[in-house]
Image (cartoon, rainbow, N blue to C red; front, side, top):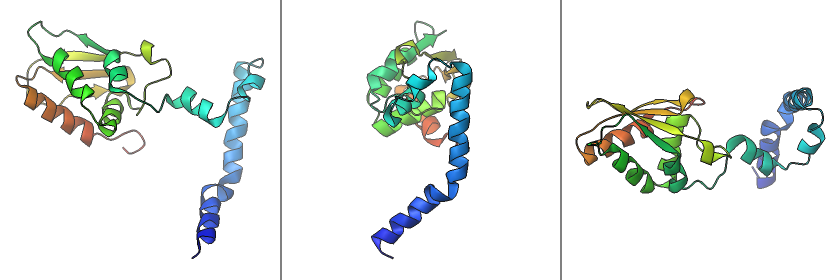
Length: 169
């Protein structure tokens, strides 16, 4: 097959054979927008696909600092080192692991556009050998008070690398 025929086949599979369904989604979306705010709808049509992507999915340029700024520690005793270890660990994450952490905690690979208002609650759990547990609907992470930083990092990495997202569950 030639490159041109591959492109034509891809265009057909991704767009043309689904055109009626895509048009129905588009029409329903604009009708919902009109029902919510008839005055704003004409202005929403001025937004580019990139603008919509940011509004609906958040920024692509995710930084470890933006994620650590969202952390809110709850219930940890003063002797716990978790509130120190978690930000240190996040600051060392690769971009892929940073997105995995967010998917684990929030169900989304990015922060919302108003990230400064977003809080990921990190809740104290009694010391144990269990993995961290996330509650994506509430942006909450239950972290056991691990006795050692290497155990903490090992458990956190296992949790974020083995979790499934909503679209892959």
